[in-house]
Image (cartoon, rainbow, N blue to C red; front, side):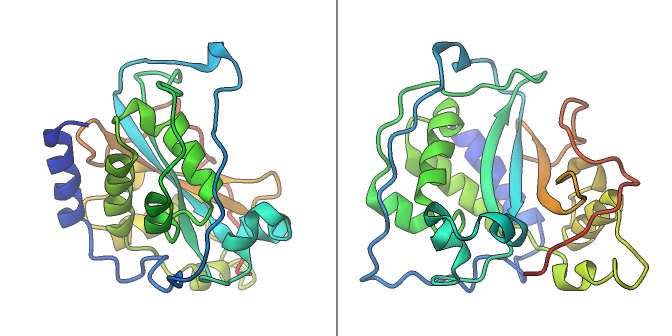
Length: 244
């Protein structure tokens, strides 16, 4: 990643509202706590390797409480779901480079095992060592040669986001005033200056429960209207939010 892109990322952090409701603020990893080491992540097959040009980015924000509802008892997910280091709302699934179409770049270079310091520094943003390893291998290697640079940019941008009151929004469904995908996107836009609602896509599971929120960014890391190939729910679809 060149110095100009880094400057744009810094500009984004200045433009967005200070993260008064950042999701990882309450996360605490004791210095004497040993974090699991991830395993090397490899592309599933040689055809999965794509070195297409970058035309923009997606920040994928995962709603942790829905994830933990069905996967929280799995050993691999305990750090995220057992409240040992924090009670997570949104976490960063990943910062993904995009192409002009759906064939986004991925698995661009062989990725070594992440240093322990990188895992510890980012575990409150993405509370899974293995997911950090995968995001670096699949997406980060297409953006920069150093995992530290990839995660520093991702963390700066994640910490710049102010999140809506998800507890309040989750209760609208029972009050008969269910929030839609467009409504949730607008709630994010309302909390973040210069983040328009058309730069946001919402993803739910087949039963209508919120899974992820995608923020669409241009090559300059500034919000842009989501391209047509970025999939999400229809604006009118009702979104249910699991509180945990």
